[in-house]
Length: 343
Image 1 (cartoon, rainbow, N blue to C red):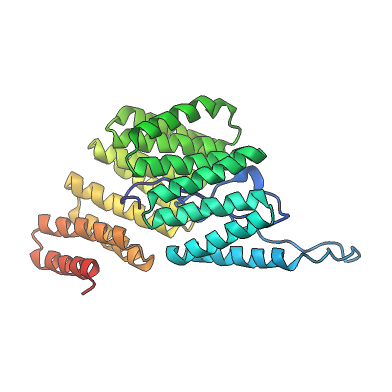
Image 2: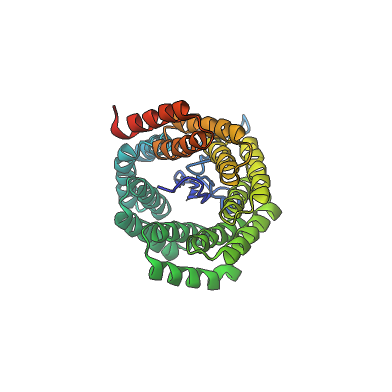
């Protein structure tokens, strides 16, 4: 799970995580990944269009096994969108095996990737890496270059999350050398965004900022607002870490406007919490900080994102304590205990 404020966009099919394509359907235009973050959140949902000339003959009936696969794919996507990862694991596992039996290599790769994302959400990073590698091997074999890149981005995220420093650096070096051959702007931006997150985690703030700005430029030129929001949020977080609070607040407001235009509830919660944390760090307008943090915590509760809800409530409690509102802070601490202990 990503910590509060980390915007991957991505989970490239999250931000960041699932992709879908039914048998016989073309890939989405430009192979656009569903950014964020993470869904928006879980990738493409491609409608089946049956409209046509009234005099045209009806299309041939699809085999029952294909119809069943389409239905089960929608079910698996619904489970992923709802965050029901345990059930999603079973659904994507079954689909991967079914597509393998049908020798449908493209959809088999999709299912393995989405299974990897599901087990990653459950914390099994080793298995997630194996599944992403399996999907990447299939996509490389059948020449699906954009999908291979998405697999690689997921592997970057797993290696960063599990602290595999050497493997991560080697993958970044290999992918960076291949970037000039990548024709899809969104994927180029996603790689730059991931490298920025890694550099920031290492404390290399100047290179991190360069990566985020390059990613933002790519997303802006290609008119990809989900990517713009992710990169802008990451710049805001970086400026907060550098104590450049004025610039950080400006960037958080830009990110919020982008997320609002996308109707991206997780992104909105992240931007509200980011503004609140930045105001607290700057010791500016603490009443406004508390209001923003409360709204973000409520949004996370609605989204059933308990880890980020708890993290935001802890920041809210700190904000209230700084204002010497001890009774209010105690009530927030009680809410945190109830969420962490279930009592």
